[in-house]
Structures are given as structure tokens and as C-alpha cells.
Length: 220
Image 1 (cartoon, rainbow, N blue to C red):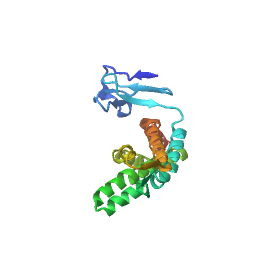
Image 2: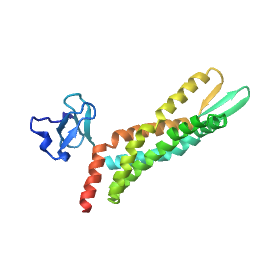
Image 3: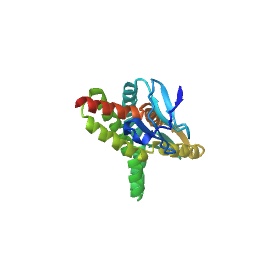
Image 4: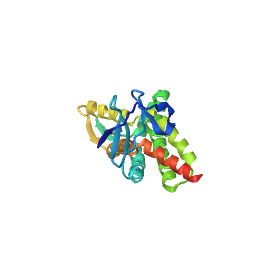
């Protein structure tokens, strides 16, 4: 169900900030909508989705983040593909790609790939897990807000989808040149990417912030 966020000619500037919301796309100032479960509010001017109030956010997000963490190691260290060329067989993983770049003299590229495809995605998942545990156990609320703020800064640096596109391009180019077999690591990598995307959709930011704020108020 989609409901447009209410807009009123009343003097919005006189209201407390917690009763207002600004559209991230067109900067329209509006009353903060009061949503029921499975409702969402969209900007009446540009249609941007402001809020989505989803059911069981905490449980669903925990299940997804734990799934992603389980898939992280096999996605990065199990073979993505096995290449048979002129009697020689090689197995490639995400980690072996980083090592190969480093040994070939492209240290900066290897560092960027390592950070964007392994370190940052792992840090994002750990931040999400810690925030959800803070909400579930109702502990370390201030610290949880800082971690969640750090997570939003890390979002721009995780590039699993770019790495997956690179893998798919390599498969297309090599499939006619050699005997190519897909490995378990590729399917784990795709599962990791899908789990992270689904987690981004499920873990509604305004509900997480509200839960952290409610816990903070309850502690006083």
C-alpha cells in the first residue's frame, strides 16, 4: 500500500524537528507521516519513497545478515571458476584475484579491489549485525547509533555488484577459449550479493533509527 506523505499549508517551520521530514530528492519539507505496518510514504512532489514501515524488520534483518556472513567466506575463498587451457588447470577465487594483481605489480589496484570487494562489505555486515543486536538486546544504544552512522558512510564503498559484473564478463570472454567450469564460490558470491540487496530493502532506515531513539529515551 502506498500513501503520499501529507503536506499542509500550516507553518512547518514552527513545528519540532521530529515531526518534520525532508525529501532526499527534491528537498520538500513535509509533516512526518504516521504509517501502519506494510505502508509506505512517498513524496507528493517527486514520488521518492520517504518511509516504508515493514513488519518484523528486526527478525528478518537478523536472518539476512547472518545468512550473508555465513556466505562471506565461501564467496571469497572458494573457487569461482575452473579454467582448463592447454592441459593446465587453474582455479580462481576473489582472494586469488587480489593476490594476482598484487604480484603483477598493480599494488594500488589490488588494494582497491581488496577493500571494495572484501573489507568494506564485511564491515558493513558487521555494523548491521551490531546495530540489530543493540536493538534486540536493548544495550549500548548510543554506541549503536554511532555504528549505524558509520555504516551509512561505508555504503558508498561496497562494490560487490561491480565485481560480479567483472566476473560475468570474464566468463563470457573465456568460455570460447578454454574449458570453463563454474565453481561453488560463484554461487555463494551471487547469494551473498542477493542477501545484501535484500537486507538493504528490509532494514528500513527510519525504523532502525526510531528503534535506537526509543531505546535511548527508555534508558533515561
